[in-house]
Length: 203
Image 1 (cartoon, rainbow, N blue to C red):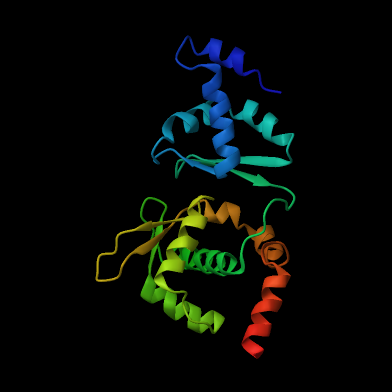
Image 2 (cartoon, rainbow, N blue to C red):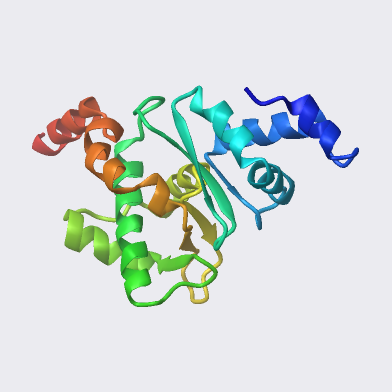
């Protein structure tokens, strides 16, 4: 296990033991640390400077740390599905955003690692790919906030008369990797919710 006290001593007073503990806790809770985010620079530097020590810690929890220096983030990926399930609407939005991100990469339409999608574009995707209506604006904001907590997306101001648009963050490709995409339907979607929705629609 990592010796935070020893690492702090090696920093010659630059960092304290609690700085390393807080960096580990933030990565555990938020799953992604972006260097450019508010308050992200110090924990990002601590994790990347002592990547081996942090990997040893997270290994004990069955998690793997990936460092993407090009886009400036570290992300922790659990090797086994555990924790709270994603709500059905969160799952739908996450999968759609992952698809949009892939499309933007293929079109070389990425800015600082992020892809952008408007609500109008999402509305069409919901119709074309899901055969559903886009959730109302209030629910969409809540869904984006949920994905923000996992480092997958964030809400930004729109350039037109739309209330906002969505920035899809690069770690979505790590969090929703191929294995996750295959498992997400079974793990992320609560079958009871699906059944309830089916019953509601049948009624």
